[in-house]
Image (cartoon, helix red, strand yellow):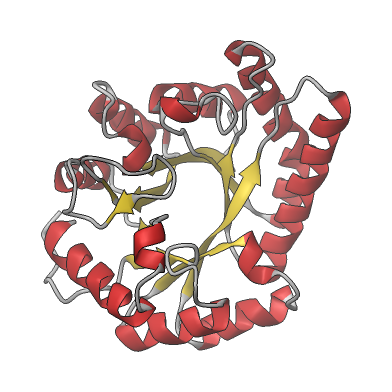
Length: 277
């Protein structure tokens, strides 16, 4: 694929969590003014709002709603907690439909009181349990593998290979994967697994940020693209080689950046996207 000009923002999406101090209305206004074309909405940003009206406000601002974050957290040794998770995922599907989001990103969950293999089975069973509601609403479900450091409680799906295996086993046109460079950059099999996503036509999302060296906090210290050690441009080339034409979603959790003037931070995001992604 030919490189787009540096000022092209047509495939740039920013998650609401990235500019967490802004409410969703302020984020939408400022993203749109800056030329950003996509927005991924975290569910907490919808609290207390008419979700359908909020979705229309985002579209009226010229933003494409890329996805809703997040569903998942299926596993537990406690049957009642597994049921509650299914209910919450069904609620997320309803919210996505009301918002006009075509996809939900799944942070799949894990329970340290049971083997990872059992958690993975419960994740697959959970996705299949809510698939009828997803089909009825026309909502895609993207399995997001997380870095192995989160295998205790956040996700028992820790490699793109595992996510691919699960999506292939479920075998639904509505179930695919989300590739986040923060979680997967270390994987020696990443290129071949991204190619596998392309062959199976289930690469649904691509998230970008960077891994700071040293990292001050493994959850709340993600870097801007170009600040750390992730070979973002190389990984992006693998993604583009699959024929992926979706958005490049900036997802940054950072206490440092959240303490800044968010307008200044937004300018930094755009510059890093143009020059380092």
